[in-house]
Image (cartoon, rainbow, N blue to C red; front, side, top):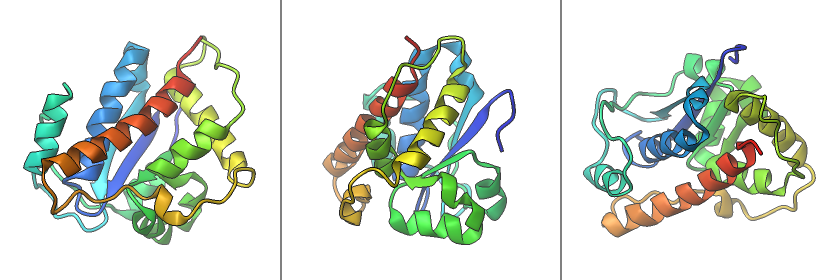
Amino acid sequence: MMTSDGCRVVLVCHANICRSPMAERLARQALERLGPSAKTVEISSAGTHARTGHPMHPHTRQVLRDRGADVSGFNSRRLTPQLVASADLILTADRQQRAACVTLVPAAVRHTYTLKQFGRLAAAVPTGRPAASKSPHERLLALREKVILARSEVPFVPGTEDDLVDPLPGPVEAFERCADEISQVLGVIVGLIAPE
């Protein structure tokens, strides 16, 4: 869990070769705009049904490279109760993975969302820009707390709207659409935690 020095964000999909590695690497890239202190936000990924040690899907790699994101050093890993328990924020590709995380560690329900759900709720949070004196991880955790409160205030949407469609077995264009959706949500989140 969170320490005074940082926080852990885990992105989760089914096999940890398409959506979650794409979200992981795009999130790291998006956080870079906050400067060196953004390294206090540790970003990783896992899959509920992943086979450990597999590379990301070739289309995922291609789309990430086309966007200038780092694709090096990736190996898939399976989601574990320890990984869920140690995370400060878990963002899943869809509701099935969200349910799997909460099944593994019921207490994680307060900080586990689908990626699109978290972005939708974050966008609805009343904002004043966070203080520049706060670190990126402190601003992200403050946003997480506001999102917890926003859950009961934001109008209901059909659950499918909060799911990130699996691009498999589609062509590279399906992966590009997936990356566009991820980038849109990350833009909201990083925009909200950027200092004035």
